[in-house]
Image 1 (cartoon, rainbow over the protein chains, first blue to last red):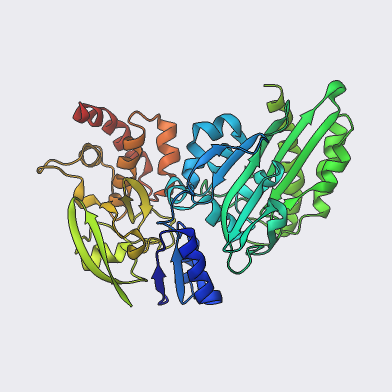
Image 2 (spheres, rainbow over the protein chains, first blue to last red):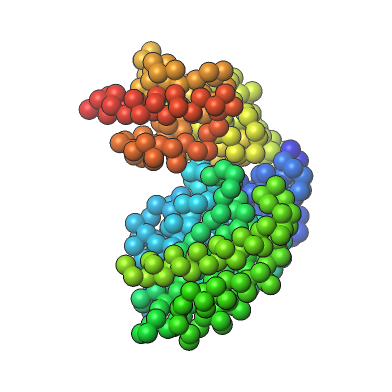
Length: 291
Length: 159
């Protein structure tokens, strides 16, 4: 393991001041499951680690106060907290279900929601569901706050839109549209705790005459970031949710995914599975809409 | 640079000097001599190093000791009370819940953590919870049986 200095500020203000002092030589740590591993493997070699463990007020899950329906989730909430929260299960069942797929219970107790998102690993479970629900992230710095959509936040392989001096402080997830159904499907040919070979989240709202009123589809593990499948959405929007249209929409994701060959499958196989699992996710979301 | 930290391990307070990069598993094993906690994969996957930090499961191989300064830690050495094994430990012995034994401390700690939050889990809930604890001897059926059989006595012990 590399050598570094550990700082444990008691407030965000102290953390910003440390970030200002140490600049690019500092890394922020929440649960540590990603950063400690990267430091062990020497993929990250910061001289200073700023632990947020003592910073209070960022581990709450609450109903939005700004008028728009949804939940505000503090960035330091443990992923297990989100997976098991009665409030999340009631208001955003897709989110609770998605977090139940992350790694193992032990890792979910350690890893935070915000830490996972800033890690920027394209194979993680939450981003596709958060994109499909239209989530947005609040980045706070000493000079203020800005809000970024989940999809714009993810820039490239392990690269996010966090700027120097910024800390992700909370995530806002809007409620799914009235009458919609949602699904998150994770294709796991190997073991239950593995990363997905392909993962798909879909939120679909069928209207009168089975016409698609609203649809959001996003994929994980098949590109350098989670992918918002806007082409597939355009094929469905305003059209009847027939088997034929669903098949056409699903086929379109093959042109937007860019998977890698690895031991979870060849790139060609993953591209085929992206189509198959997109179709199944749309169908599952529709079946859930009837409930 | 060393820093002074306080850990309450199995009910005993320890003030320890550690460098920032000291992992909790190494702190327990080398600084405190508590070698019951094992290091397996070192990447948070196998579950051998499972301990409880403030009552919650934690991979001690991915936890910086200095980052949990002030925490209460429970290891396998802290489960027996007054010379009596914890019901989960006793059940692993009674039902052959281990073969080579290296994964056992982690299995027992994970099982205890499950019964702490869910005293009456279904077999499916046990399987899902324990999926992060690997047994290289593949003795999973006996581990599952040990936990299922521990459910009764644990509830008895709590009355």
